Every structure is written in C-alpha cells, then in structure tokens.
Amino acid sequence: MSTALASVINQINQSSTLKGVDLANITDVSTATFSRWKSGKSLPNTSTQLILSDLRYVIDSLSEFYNPDEIRLWLYANNHLLDGQKAIDLINNQQTEVVLDAIERLASASYI
Image (cartoon, rainbow, N blue to C red; front, side, top):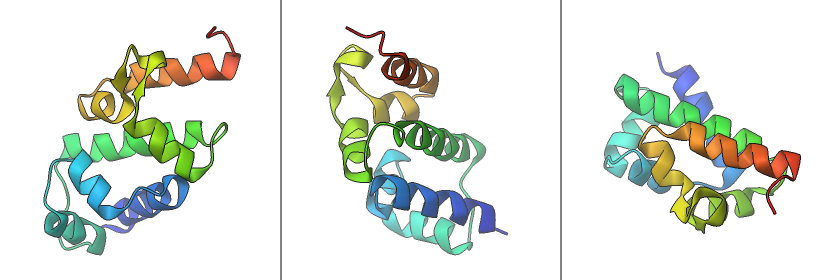
C-alpha cells in the first residue's frame, strides 16, 4: 500500500539528511503518525502527500548545488533568495513554485 510513499520518504532522508522528526514537524503531525506512514499502516491526506512530493522535488533540484547537510540547512534557513523566508515554510504553505524559482536563479546564476 505505501511502498511509493516509503520510497519518497527514504529519498528525502538520503538526499537531505532530514529525519523522520523533521518530516513530522514539516507536515504538522506527531512522530507516531509519521512512523505509521513510513511503515505503511496509514497514509497522509492528499495535501500532505503533495507537500512530501514537492519537498522531494525541491531536494532533488538542490542536490545539483549542495550536499545533503547543506540542503537541510538551506531548507530551514531564512533565505535572501526567498525574501527572508524559509523554504520549508513556503513548501508547507503550498508555495513551492516560489522556492523553485529561487533554485532556478541559482541554476542560471542570475541572482546577484
């Protein structure tokens, strides 16, 4: 039932050093609930699945520039590319496009 979700979670863990507690905090659930998702005993609602999917996409994009520890910091830090906001907060508020635009500026080296 949850092999796809478990795969997404494992990819996030490996690519960014975000742990289960981080993902539970990002998705506003308890670590027990998150553990049930990871083990396949339950699934998050569709909006939470979208947050996890968007997070994985952002992490994949950031991996072109940063190592996993740096990605974790980039996601949690106030970022000048995001007008002082945190990428994690934007992703959680379904504003992933803003984060992806900032990453695109990194890629094109157009941010000065």
